[in-house]
Image (cartoon, rainbow, N blue to C red; front, top):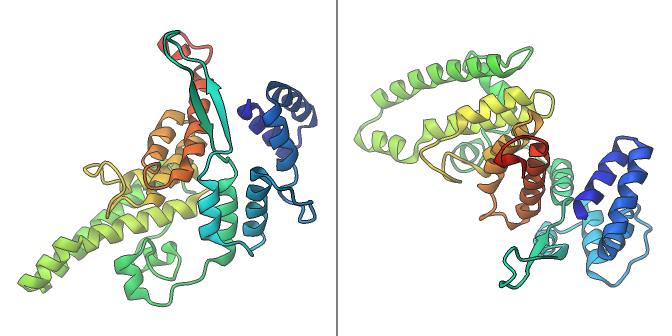
Length: 298
């Protein structure tokens, strides 16, 4: 029932009034609780909306504050990680009790990215940035490419960005060999243990992938796929959370829904607020399989 409501707001955002009313009638008729949620959701943007003493109104107020630049990020995350609605799910086995399905807030990441974009500041300490953060330096990753005598493609697509990744590997392999020749015993161990060159490579590819979105999703997918360290199955020193977020975004944008779900599930253990997005992508996978023959068409 909540998924029907998501379609209603998507149609409204696209300016399709006929589809908006159609989805709204189906969504509001499906669940009284969803009808109440819809009425409050309508008021997420207007600041003059009267406050109401219930959980959803508190949640909406947190969204409004964060989007306006006056919210507290820690408080926001502590609230939005809780489910919006619990729905009963009938048991397939009549001898088993029914279970409950948690539906999470679908607006979390929209509010987060709006807030983070408005407050992003350049990094002054470039050394600490290179060693200890997910950012390369305080500059654009495309500018970093120029220092390696490389250039971001004028018309980025999957093929040109894969070629860029291969050229980057050639430059960095040469640089790694140069550093290894210069380093003494402890210095060489330092390079190997901290994986400095591999970490730089991964962060640069991920930042390039981020800058490729939303206009060039096939390029972003190619770059992020090359950044992925497959020997590490989840988040780690070479596989940042941003990498899996980019993979999920680019997979969705290119129609690879199952692959997007695989990527987003890597984030769930560390970021509980991703659960809502994970479930929504799962629903999209099911919808995409409808009408096909075989077991995937259930």
